[in-house]
Amino acid sequence: MISRILERFLFASRWLLAPFYVFLVVSLLFLLIQCGQEMLHFVSIMRDAKGTDVILAVLSLVDLTLTGSLIVIVIFSGYENFVSKIDVDDHPDWPEWMAKIDFSGLKLKLLSSIVAISGIQLLKSFMDIHNVSDRDLSWYVGIHMTFVFSGLLLAWTDRLSAEKH
Picture 1: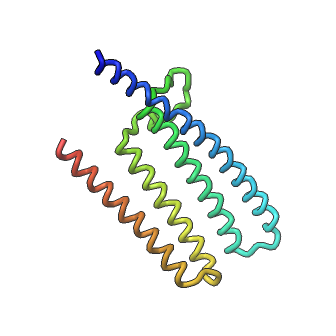
Picture 2: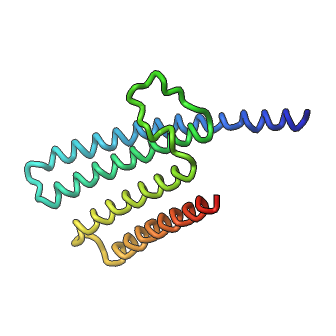
Picture 3: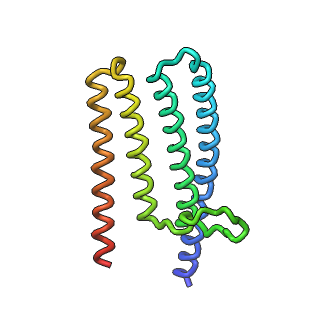
């Protein structure tokens, strides 16, 4: 009887994660505000902008978009994997992938998104190379390669794990 009560309590504790996902939705709103500010800045410099300025502004928007997409992936996949299933019958435009990402797939998608975001930051640094020190650029490359290597290692270990099962 005690074990049954404990198990119910532990199972119910998953709902403690729900506010985390609500806070991620709020952070998505803040990210949207930041994206709007970037767009206003982009529009304000457009008349006198050089090609590299336009590319850097677009890369900033792409970076924010990828970060927002990453948050959406975490919200829906995390909620479905750890809290509760979402009833999608009433949602005709529900993306197919959202109901099929397990924890392993979520980790890979997260790391892939982080690698893409890091790559965009690195590209922005290369586009503005005259204003970036060699030391900073070395750090950016090192950090990016760490993310790439981590992603490859994670994918490889997941593949090995899947082969054993």
